[in-house]
Image (cartoon, rainbow, N blue to C red; front, top):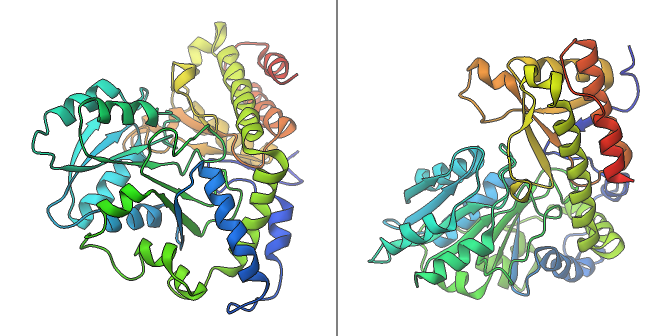
Length: 400
């Protein structure tokens, strides 16, 4: 057995939490009515805006990503409202279902599990909405399940091209801090995220960034409740009301440490470049494994076009059940946990055992990524799974 030692979860969230973040949270409860916690909040909000590349507003919730969906949805919609959901994976469908559960009428454009959103299809659907009933376009920047990366700027251009008044709302839960994202420059009105992926903080914080156009569009939203109301969180004079009650104190201290690392030390542009490089190393390895003998094992990247692949997570396929066999081996014998192929086949379908996800998001570097790739190759050797050669040396060359 060689799994003894620090285990590494190469799953797409919760991601690796830096020791500095854990240490910042390891403290006694603070005063929630004044002092250090209050003093750090102005800078924290400003850094959250820097992360999203916006000059507008941000609301912070005690919630996960599903809570961030609900916060955005309840602040934007009223009974009888309509949305257009652009689906490229399970979580794009998930946001659509969450909106429907609240009573929104949702029209879907489903682009499958391997291809990005087609802006021309969006333009066509909106052009056909001559009465302007569609209030919001919902989309994922990156869908965690498929690793498809979409282009919000192109979707905004499609909306504007046909003169439609729809708000553009983007889920960046899998991508923020990893893939390039420019909220204001791309014309995004609402963006949601959660703390446990590229933001390098434990699960428990949900975020909604919004501009004045979104504030105006949601001014009369009748599904808004006191807890989810984003106007209270961005306009409240009292600290207590900015969180709908007691603040998530220790998460905020951890988030402060994470943003110090990401914004002020590494810099967000450098973080984008790091994730892009680590992603290319992973893609290069799987391309090599899929050559020659690897064709018999069905090894390949889920997304064919590199320009449409996430820099935070990579979804890959094998002939079933090889992906599950590899995941079980690396967890038991190498101390590495890989992501399941979530949403790539119906639940209970044996085909699901042919997919896995490799995360390279957040607090991740060269030796961690090469270690994961080495564990996967070792598993294939141990399980006698045919694969192409030279993967590790090619990945190393990308990172050299």
